[in-house]
Length: 195
Image 1 (cartoon, rainbow, N blue to C red):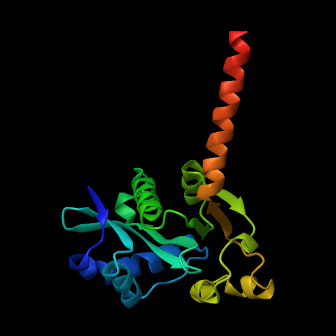
Image 2: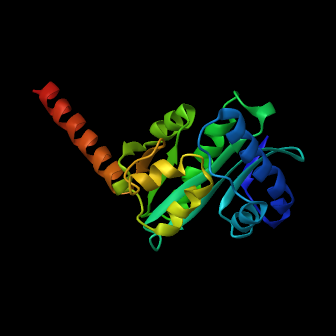
């Protein structure tokens, strides 16, 4: 299995990726916004996607989008082909796109919205925390992406304050401060032990 930044040669998988996302939404019966092959192609061509291939067979995908002039980065479209589910591929893709996002947008807050418990767990393990939608980007173009989700009426009825999705956010500044706090706690405990 090869997981890599998608390149122009991977555009040929855009239709398969789009269809896999749509089919998954229908099977799960939950809210997953549809993405057209053209939209997927754009993400691939812009170098904003990760693709997993088993030889020449599509296995998984995820893309990034920058919002608020690079202050926020969203991970979207995480999908694993049915025959590759249950083996940890989603976590591997998500980890790779998370690290790629931090490298490409080092100061950005990284977020995602999901109804999927496995994705929530992956996000949490990467350092994301559940947040209210008010802590996510207020860019209206991001929220337009939800229009094809079957739960869009909930989002609009609540003026984008809540939906059936859970918003999750990784803040690099909070993560850095948390590490400093844990390090200081350890140092203080070590001093006490030395006494």
